[in-house]
Length: 460
Ligand code: ASP
Image (cartoon, rainbow, N blue to C red):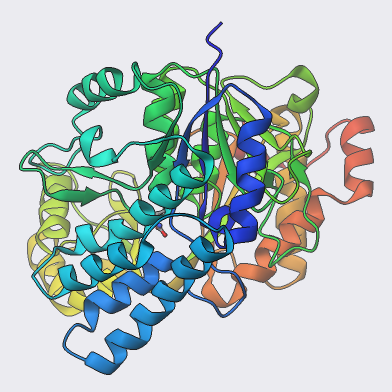
């Protein structure tokens, strides 16, 4: 078995010198931790800024000297304090000076945003005495902006096969012309996943500030349960629905190579965290749910009595594409369509969008509901599916929460409910409480099913 661990440390794990010390200790505790991927420093207190956000603010204020200096000074303060307190022999001020000049000599946005990870990588490699590898030498993008998987694989193998231990900044790579290109925000997770996959790691550790994946957002639900094991599919669905655990795109590379992900807590390294792999241990399959997450600011567009035969759907998609609207969900039958789209995108072109639909598709009616949130529930105990859903609907209805739409987007165990934005937190809390109610759990374990007939439509 390959004795190699790729460990990625997020911004909160490397926000200041104290965190750097914790991370060094964790890395040195296990010799298999050979490739360390780092994010830019995150917040150290509630109202603090992440370095990547500060870099973006600087980028947007190059024409406003005072504002620029104000933000740049915060960045400088963070890095200088880390280096001074760690007593590093590194002229960080010189690097910062060069980056400051880059802002005024037309550096691209991607280049600027990548500097947070670059500097943190330099500092941590010095602190732990591992080789520094610049990801622009090993992560390669195609002209169309997609990752060039083949080129990246060759570059990583060529470079890392000769390096015993390395620190690699996350979040960016390079285009064919050598210019810097970043992944989407939170993209250091993707870097760690790619390196794990190419180097065939035995495990991809993702270190953050919670002891694994929680069943619901702790800002909404008090002390939510920790999920010990999850499947790749569950975490993908949960992340897609707004859970802030792993970048959604980071799961595919390790999933394809069947490398387990272990989410760990830098501030509590003895906690074993959450393991994510292909299958669940038998014990975990009996759990009621794997998680609840939600995201807001969508619209539901319902078109009724329209002719979908003869290119009707193609015409609808042409209108959607022409208006640059991304579709979160689509369902249709012979003469009606429901679309879920981002509110902000729809509002920009609502009048022209409707008039195009009216002239080209001539529906009997168009209804639009703005300010819709989507709440995803990943149900595990599929044998008890109907009882669980019954309980959730009963509780939501008792609390007057109007369900605007129900979907089963990817598999029968993944339910998505559309509710009003104002009800998002309340809905998540109620679902969590419904499902973790000891009376329900007892009932699920003992009672045979006796449910209203309409619940049968939701499950085989
Ligand atoms: N620093 C980047 C961000 O804040 C990337 C990352 O942390 O993964 O999005």
